[in-house]
Image (cartoon, helix red, strand yellow):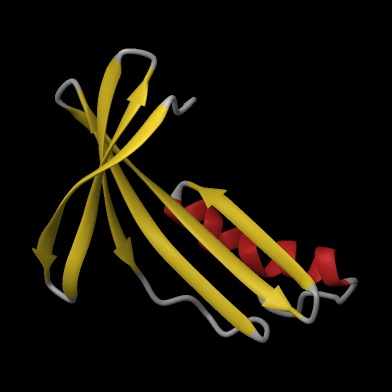
Length: 103
C-alpha cells in the first residue's frame, strides 16, 4: 500500500496504555491505522515489535512489524503475524551469518 500522507489522528486507550491512531491516505482512500507494541523474543542486542491494524471501507487487516539489531546489523520483518513469528529467527540468522537453532 502506498502512502501519500500519514496524519496522527488520536490516541486511544488500550489494555496496556495508549495506542496511537493514524490516518493514512492510499491514493484518495483514508485508512485508519492503530498501533500496538507487542513482545518479541530476545534475538539480538535490541528488538522491537508492533501490530498495525489497518481499517478501510469496513474491512481490516493486521500486520506485524518486528525489528532486531545484532551489532551493526538491523533486520526488519513485516507481514502476517504468524509468518513474522515463524520467520524472524531465520531472517536474523541469515542476515548475521549464524545458523538458526530455533524453529
